[in-house]
Every structure is written in structure tokens, then in C-alpha cells.
Length: 441
Ligand SMILES: Cc1cc2nc3c(=O)[nH]c(=O)nc-3n(C[C@H](O)[C@H](O)[C@H](O)COP(=O)(O)OP(=O)(O)OC[C@H]3O[C@@H](n4cnc5c(N)ncnc54)[C@H](O)[C@@H]3O)c2cc1C
Image (tube, rainbow, N blue to C red; front, top):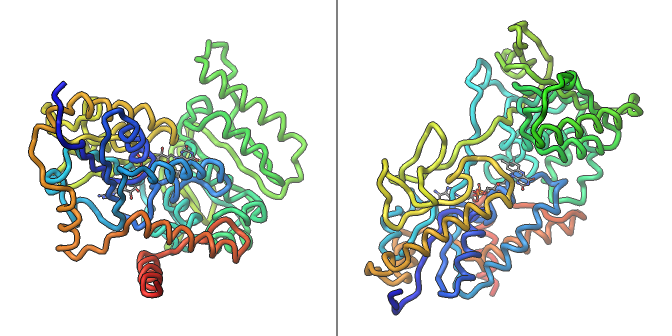
């Protein structure tokens, strides 16, 4: 191995789980590195902050391990900087030996049917952004005054929304749910939530444990509208696990006849049109024999997956919604782009829970390590030049210390409302908080 005088410098675009897992592997290497994360939002942690449901505070607590990674001496974070707009990847390559694209996959897939423009039709991630008070979606105005809601899709995100709409709001009050969402949920008239899947019950994409969580919602009954597989065909272990989870669910729901709310599980129905004049009034599906099935509702939410978020000048496959790559090395047609890598949902598609990003990030870091000598053989400008470039452009970037101040202020707002956190809903509010704090110091 060639001995180099300087440390390997890696920039990571994004600061969601994939970015932090990559940073962790890089910072724990025997040959030390510098890691610089560049995040378009003034806040880190990606979908852990914006999408994970507030009744899953244990999952959101993964951010505590990210906080520990951020304490490492070789770590820096620049928030409120969008790569592709404020700075380009090729500019970053002047200062960094490797650039990892870890921009996630938060663009919702469309159904491409009539009625998607209607009011009260949302993607599951937008709806999750609303109840989490995210910067993009805190201002949504979902109308929960009608008795029924339809959720299209059978993945974890679809079931998150079903749970949130049927869980007694009091049990969410101490979480970090947005206080606006909590108020609207308290006033909700929704009694029936229909979760509708295109495929059969054993092809559902949610984890079997999710059925257990639905079954455990107080004052809510789960109703199966499709009979379970009665063929004797041999099932894969995954399908067998799902079948047993449904069977347990059905048994536990029999004594909940008087429940105030219901989650209806429908399968083998293809969405055909969202109906309504201005706002959603129902959803029309076709069953396997193309017979129309209409479900009246005042709110329709689609949780049918996401596309990756590309970055200007980096190759992107719009069909698959990913950055094309081989073991994390970004490919332009069949050629590797030197020094550009990818990790997380934008690398392999929008599937898998937070922990599923770990092996994918380990692979990317291994590729960087394999390319290390080549990467270090190029001459780069000092990384201080990157900060100078941001300043020269007048970009109001945030440091990790700034984020810690925002974090502390959000938690403080939460304490006043007897909840874990109350988020700021705009970048401007966060920036003015920092300005006020620095003026007071
Ligand atoms: C609704 C929903 C609920 C979920 N619930 C769970 C759950 O309960 N448990 C679980 O384990 N997993 C859950 N997941 C999955 C989990 O969120 C993903 O596995 C994980 O977030 C993917 O990590 P990532 O870093 O690839 O992407 P992300 O978390 O999306 O992070 C990408 C980051 O890149 C930033 N970025 C994008 N473009 C740019 C740019 N041009 N410049 C700078 N920064 C940029 C984004 O702002 C973001 O911070 C859920 C997902 C969704 C959609």
C-alpha cells in the first residue's frame, strides 16, 4: 500500500441514515478520514425525522446513535446547502477525494389515474410529513371530518397512516407528533379506515409484525375482507409467517365487535379512479374480474412507494428511481465515475427499514477503501476552501452546533407542551432563532 501524507476526505450528500452509517464506517477505519455531510435541510436525520411515525419513538431514537457519530473529531455537517443548486458535485470534487450521493428516495410514486389532483388526496409520505411537522408538509390541511378514509397500498408506510388515524390521540400526546396534527386527530370523525392492496394478502409488503401492531390498537377492530389462502400449495417461509400473522389477527379481533373504529383490509383491488368534484368523495377499484368496487371516503392516501432523489450532473435511472452503480461506485452507462459513490435508498431503491441500509453502506465504504490509493493520488484543494466557497456565494449554511441549538429549542418547546418535542415548521424560524441566540451571546 502507498503511504499518503494526508487524510482521505469524503463528502456525503444527505444526512439520513445512509449518510450516518457511511460516516460511521469511515470514521472507524484504522486509516482515519475526514467526513463532511452536506444536507439541504437545516436539520439532519432525513426520513427518521420526517417520516417515522410518532408512535414509534423507539425507532426514532436511532438518531441518538447518529448524534454520537457526529461527536467524532473528523466529522463536520453543513445544513441548508442543496447540492446541485448551491454547489455542484464537480465543485465538491475539488476539495473531497470521494463524494457519496445518499439523497434517499422521498419522491412518492404516482398512481397515474384520474383524480390525483383532487383536494384531500395525499401521498403517505406527505401525510407522515404532516403529522411529524416536517418543513415540506406541516402546512397540509387534511380534512378528517368524514367517517371514512381510504389508504391505497400495503407497505409499512400505508399501515403507519392507518395506525395514526385509528390510534386514540391521547396515547400520542407525549410523543413528538406535531401539536397541530394532534389537535386535528383529536377532532377526527374518522371511524373506518380502508387499507386497499392491489395484490393478495400473502403478497403484502408490510412486515408480519405490523399486523400485530394493528391488532393492539385500543378501541379499534381490524376486519379482513379477503379470505386467506385456502389452497394447499406450499408457502415460502415469509408467506407462511404472514399467513400465521393474519390468522392470529383474525382470532384476536373477534371480541372487538363494539370497537369505535375499524381498519378494513382489502386485497386484489386495482385502483381505477379517485372520485370527486373538487375534493375526494370516494375511490373506484376494479376487482380481479374487472367488476367496479366503490369505497366512499373524504380522504384518500396512497402509500405505493418512492423514487430516488437524483442530483444534478450525477447519472440517474428514472425507471428504477436510483443512481446506477456497481457496489456503490456510480456508473455513467457502463463506466465508473471516478470519486463518485452512492449509498442508501437512492442506491438500491426505496425499500428496507433503517437497519437495512447498513450492509449497503458497508459495501460502498469498502469500494472507497479499495479505491483509496487512486483517490489520494489526485491533488485537491484544502477542505477549508469548501467553506470559503459557501461563504463567497452568500449561502447561509448551518453547522452541527447550530443544529444542536435548534434541537434543544424544539425539545424545550416540547417540555412546555408536555411532549417530547415541538418542531419548528420553517427554515426562516430556525435561522432567526440562531441569529437571536448569537446576538445574545
Ligand atoms: C413514510 C415512511 C415511514 C418509514 N418508517 C420507518 C420505520 O418506522 N422504521 C424503519 O426502520 N424505517 C422506516 N422507513 C424507512 C427509512 O426511513 C429509510 O430506510 C431510510 O430513511 C433511508 O435512508 P436514506 O439515508 O437513504 O434516505 P433519507 O432518510 O431520505 O435521507 C436522505 C437525505 O438526503 C437529503 N438530500 C436529498 N437531496 C439532497 C441534495 N440535493 N443536497 C443535500 N441533501 C439532500 C434529504 O434532505 C435527506 O435528509 C420509513 C420510510 C417512509 C417513507
